[in-house]
Amino acid sequence: MALKPVRIDDLTPHEYQSLMKRSQVDITSVHERVRDIIRDVKDKGEGVFLDYYRAHYKPGLKPQELEAGRDEIQEAYENVHQELVDALRYAAGNISKFHDAQMDKAMWQIEIAEGILAGRLITPLQRVGVYIPGGRAPYPSSVLMTLLPAKAAGVKDIIICTPPHEAMAINPAILVAADIAGPVRIFKVGGPWAIAAMAYGTRTIPKVDKIVGPGNIYVTAAKLLVFGEVDIDSPAGPSEGMVLADQTGNPDFIAIDLLSQAEHDPDSAVVLVTTSEDLASTVSDIIREALHQIPRKEIVTSSVTRYSHILIARDMEQAIGFVNEYAPEHLEIMTEEPFATLKKIRNAGSIFMGPFSPISAGDYASGTNHVLPTGQKARMFSGLSVDEFVKKPTFQHVSKEGLSLLKDAVVTLARAEGLPLHARAVMERFK
Image 1 (tube, rainbow, N blue to C red):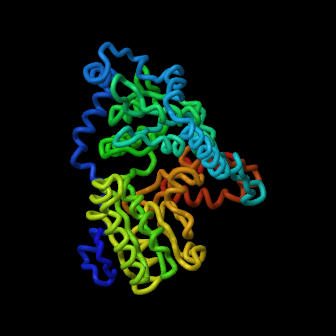
Image 2: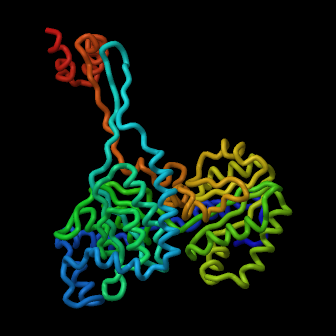
Image 3: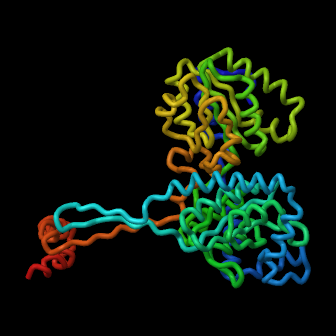
């Protein structure tokens, strides 16, 4: 972190653009390798990754062993502390309640004019694939955040792919979370292999309609490469946390909230934007002291020294303008009137208002989703929701009287575009 607070007006154009860019994912370095993996899985099927897992994880691995069985799930409960099981169930209840409320009615219609009825259906996707990472630490909360919106949308067939560990085992917390959010099928495949398998289907892993869920640069590249064959959610990069504060902000709360987001990843970006020079200085001092005694020190230190900043705005208008251009994944509003400030925020993935709404609450249990757009993509993407798992086809019913109202406009437009049979399709009905 630039621990010394900096005024936004004092940033050079290069510094400003670097701050906006932060650690945005660039897949060009892995594009060719990932493309080859996807092609191999598409052409040769699951044998491509079966051979690898046999060589490195379990000799003689059979295709059916790629799927976690019910006995493995039951055993997982025995290896997860009851306190964690209870926390997952509590969080699942809140997440389900929030996402169930997002569902619109299954159909709506409107009379455009007499005899012209138009409307829209809302139908769930048939099969969805969810990718759950298995890197530095297991994230059972991400299982809930990805499965439960699909379930709320009415998706009946949901599969998970997650990387296995030694002896083809899956972290038990992942299995328990999936079972709580279920029903779901769980496959022990990771990386681009998993994305390709879900996109094209193999003998064991079924083809899906959409793939969601976070992952590393290889997973992100794979998702982008199979887009079109299947739909995907918005590409996500390292975590981001921003706090927008005036002089009423609590410096201790702000400092720990920034540090908490920095512990996600060495490339995470955390930013304080404030109109108060005193607050900026105090937060800077607290963070500097905390760095000597925090857990995950190496990760946090990397994050706060590379892509993170404390910025002073000349007024709230400039501060909000900066927030909207930065388009953070997470935004905390710690101002005197947070709801008034909220009305001026256009670009943010998820917004947390007031001193007792830390990002951590939304990361786990408040009910909102933590799968969110990063790298300025909150300008055009929203967080994961039931909308990601439904289609909305339109329908219409036009009577003869209604078509007579449309006839002249349709015929004129069709002829102007050089499509005489379009015009004839209408005129034929009035012979």
